[in-house]
Image (cartoon, rainbow, N blue to C red; front, side):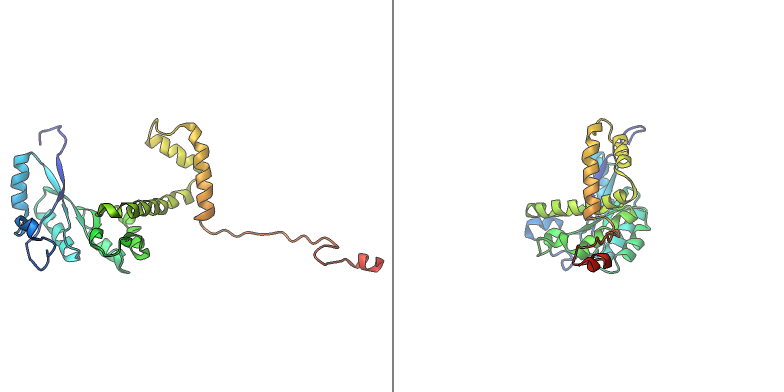
Length: 236
């Protein structure tokens, strides 16, 4: 990379020491992959192609592999980031994330959703709960699905957006949020759109926001609700 030029990054690179038992998904159609793929070889080919760095992505759903990829990043600086795996459904997910995110090269988490027998796996409450933890550690989620999963992926994106947006909505009023959006995305949001955002924020607070105490005044007038005053009874 020359001074002042943009870094060219291969955003999806796999490394492994091939073991048929661990990589059973590599079938005869991909027989060329049935061997070790390690950083030294990748760096040589990347240099020839003018690629400066790469992001190593998990291929096995084990903490062991995530730790190994992070160790490779320590010894091979051209590995600029790692997308690893933790068990997002585990009650121990936060601890797993805390351990792995302590390494500065961890940039994201991936689960091989396309191999799950349940097409709606991504919407399981335990998985969504784990996914919600990623913001705490500044990590992205790398989604891996087939085309049949796209409607579920879109539903998941809406849920995650609600989870994250909820934290903002609870802390700020619509005008403050809108002003921040206009600063971040100049010329994208017209002033007239504020009313739309205000309605959406109001609706979100009513349906998804924190619970509020509601008080109803008690006003009993004589002769109503089968109640009478002593004065009225004496007249009768």
